[in-house]
Image 1 (cartoon, rainbow, N blue to C red):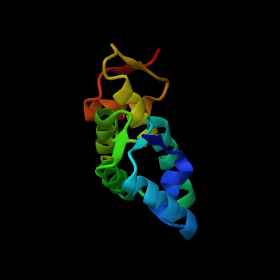
Image 2 (image 1 turned 30 degrees about the vertical axis):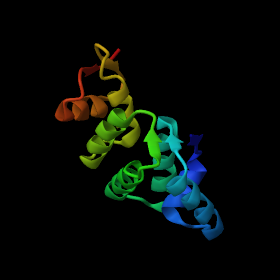
Image 3 (image 1 turned 90 degrees about the vertical axis):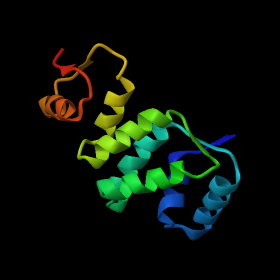
Image 4 (image 1 turned 60 degrees about the horizontal axis):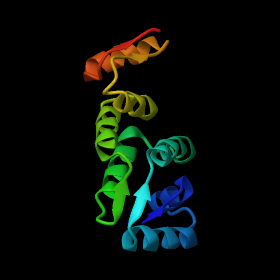
Length: 129
């Protein structure tokens, strides 16, 4: 199994450098490919800020990649939860943090908007430290 970096995933999704896209495509579609949670987190930031991906476009793109038979995500359930929350309007980074903390007693943050959003999504106890 081969692990890929953010730039490989982004090339595969946006085809902004066709030669690199073809390399990424051959790799991802033919080889067992591992994608770490951190690569997905960084990819969301790059796609949103560098390529103007909106929430739905990002969610659909990652679900499509994750559905390829050659692709293994580090934390498939965590990513599925974070994508569902992102689709409903929660920031992907925040969604991923909350999904990762699901087995904890509480997620502590100074971000009041995150605490309110987490309550709407049933994301566990989120409170100030």
